[in-house]
Amino acid sequence: MKPVIVLLVLAFAAAASAQCTCKTMKWAMCDGTPCQCTVLVGDNVKQPLECQELIPKCFLMKAEMYRAKKGLSTRTGGKPTEHAFVDNDGIYDPECETNGLFKAKQCNNTEECWCVNSAGVRRTDKGDKNIKCEKLVETYWVRIELKHKEIPGYVMDKAKLKTAMESAILERYGLPKEFVKDVEYDKDARLIVVDIKKEKGDRKQDLSRMAYYMEKDVKVLPLFKSEAKFEPSVEGKANLEMENILVYYVDEDPPTFTMKRLTGGVIAVIVVVILAVAAGLLILYFAQKRQKAKYEKTQSERERERERERERFFFLLIPVQTGFGSFAIHLPHCRSCVEGVGGRRRRVKLEEEV
Image (cartoon, rainbow, N blue to C red; front, side, top):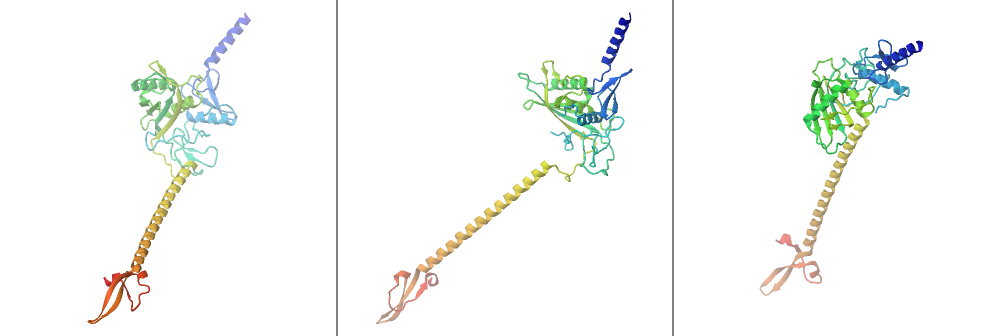
């Protein structure tokens, strides 16, 4: 009888353990009755999780940074408005509020600090620890660009694609369909553009969670316990396997980036442009100078040619004596013609005579 009881207890414990898992965080550790799940975000620092919903992005990033420091696996791998921006800084070790929100000022455990939005993305230039971040600015609009792999022989219908994306986002990330405002499709580029918006002032729905989970689904490996991928199904005929993703963030207030801190790439581009313009101006200057010198040389040669022509021809003034008196004969001649002619000679230039 006792062996049977032991087996029943073990079976019950195994069933309870199987149910005590965190489906939205694969690194979570779960135990106890009722089931309680936590994730390590520091040495002996366990962050309690609500596994019935997506985990706040700030907690996820802290867990990733801790695992990266410990050498554990993380597998981290067109703008809607002029104020939209992407996360170019990558992952850092964030400071979180107790409810999982990002603190407005982040420093990544360094002396360099900056301000972030509700998605934890930097929205100001970096400064020192005296930088002022008045509030955590809310991200109300997320644009997601997804590129899917080729589907030979299938012609995509935009309306059916929108339905498929709405259903997939709802099923996988728990985001209601009304937040998916628009879906555009470029068949040549195999590009899907999804606009996800909430009303300004809405603090109930956190769009950054969905965007971060989707980024991990496409770029790396899912954060979910299940290894199933994000593959929207269109009419049940085509599963869209994604190969790339780009996320733009639009905040309720525009970001405050300036030109004070340019990246090396931007500086290099500016230097190249300036050098190209300077080289063009120098080439133009020397070309004009050369043209002017050539023109002046031509004019000088013409002047010298005219002088030579004037020197070649002149008039001879020859006195003649007759019985009726004396008079002079003016004869146009060249210099070589008058050599050896006796008597009184006088050269008179043609122009002066005329």
